[in-house]
Image (cartoon, rainbow, N blue to C red; front, side, top):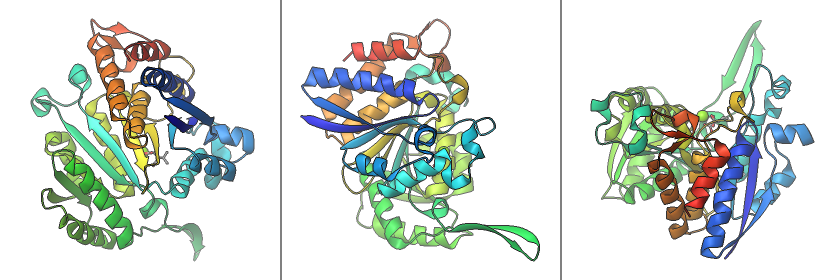
Length: 360
Ligand code: IPM
Ligand code: MG
């Protein structure tokens, strides 16, 4: 089949890691008889450099014409990059938020898995991680504090900033349903995370999630306060299957969850809308400190491409082939520097891509 894929290489290590994912996709396409047409799209700092803004209307339109978008990472070093001299609405991150909203990517899936091969990198005690863990953070991505009204004003001579947190029941219902659908394909447990002891938006969240749960009698639903969840993630990560939460909490908890795996360079993510379209990107950031050195780990981006094959292109077999190729290369002892341990073979970004593509 023919597919049209938008490619956002982005900033920092983005171009290096996306190049490797394209290498793997190309090999997969040849092997399974598909044709992939790429459309390069500019976002973040790369777009600011060319157009003066982090996202143009033209890029949004082009992205909408694609079956899916594969992304590297955006943003730079806030202390040194000229992008951060611009007003907040023109900085790289603003482009990312806008594309999420424009494409209606309300469901953000961030898996956090402890890879058996990489157990040594996990910062938690062995007795806690015994048997591994495998959770999916489902983060609402187009509402809440990120998209509420915000302003900074002077009131009676005192500078005062406002950020508003709003959710309506429809926004909560659609992400809850997505969470339960995903749980049905996993271990059938949803932990809905909120701050219902303080926030009205969380009390509505809890009510609507409970209503949605009625349609999924096989799924066990539990509620957890966000502060407790932050603690439980390091105390007993095994207890989680699907964590369902709002935008801001999901931002924080997904970083924490990826950190406890010890290998953020391995974690993929997908941002989906109501259709099969999605934007796929590694969970890690643009890592400007190591950009251009050929040492970044491309595996998270390669696994994001696998998620894209599965969720947007409906190519399960091909997605599994990519995942198995990654597993094989790790089992053969190849590691990028971030996941390197004694006795293993250290390789750079491009060689890692070659090795994985070679296993397909
Ligand atoms: C993420 C990032 C973004 C977010 C930033 C770059 C705006 O931290 O994807 O988690 O907060 O959503
Ligand atoms: Mg984040």
